[in-house]
Image (cartoon, rainbow, N blue to C red; front, side):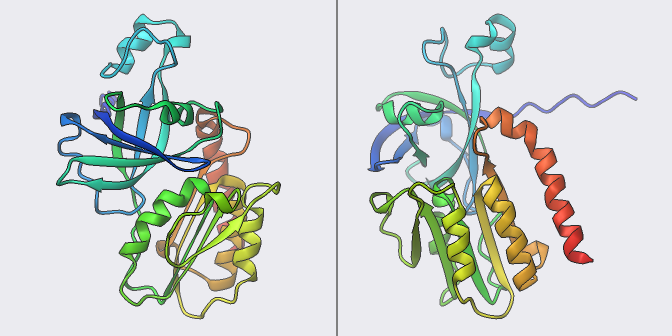
Length: 275
């Protein structure tokens, strides 16, 4: 049987309009330019893009064909893909806002964002996405670490008018908080990512009824909190948005390789709850 040719991901090129450091560990980059025409975000509040970033000093720049680069350049010059949430898309201005968690020179995308200057160009694919707050839920629970903060912030103004919402965000410390209404800020300090957040959510008295739940961030705590939420409130799967954005000690490439096993473990949790 002949396989259908693999569909090529549509890529675009955005140009840095401005960049600013919002908190010690968060840099906001606003992209614009003709390359973003028809971008089309807006249906979901967890829209994301996949940035295609050449290594520093690479002999090429955006726009580029990934397959051509891989065929013509040694592997150390191949671009890497990093996934980031769309903080905002202004269709009228043609501006795409992306917030980056930055820890010095660690990683690839963080250092790029910290050094971004107007006129810099970046190649990206997207948007993807799947979640927006449901008007059918009795109340809403949103919880995540720094990596989920842009999606949670984007969801807040989309909550149904008058809806009860409990929102928890874990950041390193007080300096990393933002001016967002209704958010309970949890400070990580020296604790493992997500441990303080999980404890805060489970220690809070939450209402009865069926919630719409959004739990995203580091894979370890996300799975733990998902199990607890499903057991405590019996949330229907269609009202449960859960994703391990990243995993401690793994690059995005490593986490992509681990993800099938993580998904299988989550399904095993689901089966155990059904017993």
